[in-house]
Length: 388
Ligand code: PMP
Image (cartoon, rainbow, N blue to C red; front, side, top):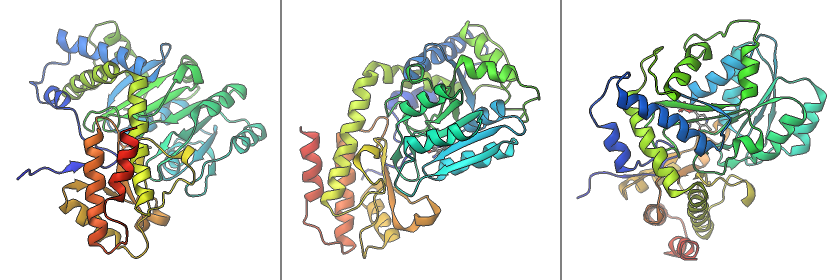
């Protein structure tokens, strides 16, 4: 009997065997020539994945929240005004974090399953002098996707730095950092980047680096201070070693492998694969009578889905039953509706068989839990998309 289950949560995800092999290879010194090469390559490959030839990449041991902290701590000074565009739990987190560094935060909070209209963002930018704005590409608590391009352009128009939380999107959704004029695009290793948890990854524009250089007060977070990290990134990019904090050597080795696999597939192909699998999931959920949190198709993420439990089905029992069928899914996260929905991650190495196995496990569990739906409608709907 196969003892492992299929991990279909929105991070950590299922990882490529080659990535896991790199993680399990003997740990080298962080100043060894092969590691210097690996680190330097990873920095270069990040710029290709982020589509930011002009950006400054950072690879730092920590989680996605550290990546958010790096942006907040380095770019905010006491009394700066920040606009947070929130489409769920992680928008609220950014607001809290910026406040901790002394920002005066205004939050534009979208209704559950909705986005903030562009005009409303522009109205806010017109009405005050913000130093920066943050927004979440895909909020993992709602599966709502925001279109970053117009927001990047608004940031340029009003001279406001733009910070994109791409934890649940980088390498799974389309991103053109330079083209869209976004100053910071940040993520974590455990999602579509395809490396086990433990790396905070971000690419920062020249303009944001300049804003940081012109600070009047010291950065209020010692570990996150770019003063400590920028020389390290510059050194490794020039294939020299340097030390501030010990790099997560094995994770960086795994990162290089994963970034190469991502670019081998090609960004366009990769995004298309994510779109197709996401659509297969959505069509199957609808066929099974489940309603999605995002209120229209254009704002549904391609990296995860968040359907409500159907009427009369006990959510905890359903997830347990799906687990018995060999698939691990995640429960709700947004506090106000946490008990009413679940989440399915479909990013990174995900393939057609993973999608079909998950939909099959869900369909069988729904039947067990008393939901009335014709047997096989979910799989049929998914196949229509996958075979098209
Ligand atoms: N932002 C988003 C959109 C996320 O999905 C997450 C993690 N689920 C985070 C930030 C925080 O990342 P981490 O859990 O790695 O700290």
